[in-house]
Amino acid sequence: MPPVDVEAYSQLQQELSPRGVKILAVSKTHPLEDIQQLYELGHRDFGENYVQELLSKQKQLPADIRWHFIGHLQTNKVKQIAPFIYCIHSVDSLKLLQEIHRHAEKLQRIIPVLLQVHIARESTKFGLDETTLMQLLAHHHLYPNAHIIGLMGMATLTSDTEQIRTEFHYLNQLFQQIKTRYFSDRADFRELSIGMSNDYRIAVEEGSTMVRIGSLIFGPRITH
Ligand SMILES: *Cc1c(COP(=O)(O)O)cnc(C)c1O
Image 1: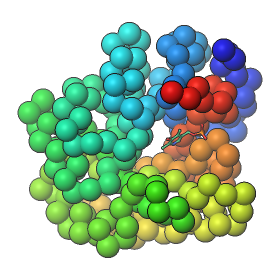
Image 2: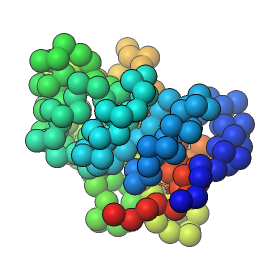
Image 3: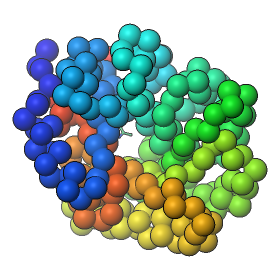
C-alpha cells in the first residue's frame, strides 16, 4: 500500500492556505492508518462517500475528526450519520433536505449542508438542476436544522480545461445570485465546494473555498 504523500499534502497547504481555501482530504477506500497519519500532521477535515465505510471509520478514529459526507446520500441512511456528521456536501433533493432537518431537530443539532448542483456534461453525475434548485430554495426556511452554507459541484471528467472552467464559473455565478436573493443576511452562506485532484487549480481561480482532494494525497483509489 503506498503511504500518504506527505510532500504533496504540504505543497497543497502552502499553495491553498494563503488563499483561505480549505482542504478536504477525501479518504474513501483508504485505510484507517492513512487517515491517522494525516491526522497526526494536524489535519482534521476528511470526506467520505459511503455510509457504511464512514460509520466504521468514525468509530475507530479520533473523535475530533470533522467528517464530511460527499457521496450520494439515500434518505433512509441520514439517521445513521446525523449524530456526528460535520457537513453534508451532497444535498440533491428537497426530500433529502427535509430528512436531514428532521433528524437534526430530534438530536437538537444544526447540520451544515451544501446543495449539490449538476454542472457536468455527464448525465450520470448527481446534483440539482437550476429549476429544482430554485424550487428547493423557495422552501428551505421550513427546514432550519439543515443549515445551507453553500454549493457543491463536480465538473465533467475531461482534459478540456476550458470546459471545466466554464462549469465552475457558472456555479460561482449561481452561488453569487443565490447569496443575494436568499442569504444576503447570512454571513455563513459562503462555501463553494469545487475542485478535485485533477482540477483544483482551476476551481481555486474560479472561487473555490474548499477543494476535495483524494488521489493527490492518498494515491490511487483502492477499488472495492
Ligand atoms: C472521490 C471524490 C473526490 C476526490 O477525487 P480525487 O480525484 O481523488 O481527488 C472529490 N469529490 C467527490 C464527490 C468524490 O467522490
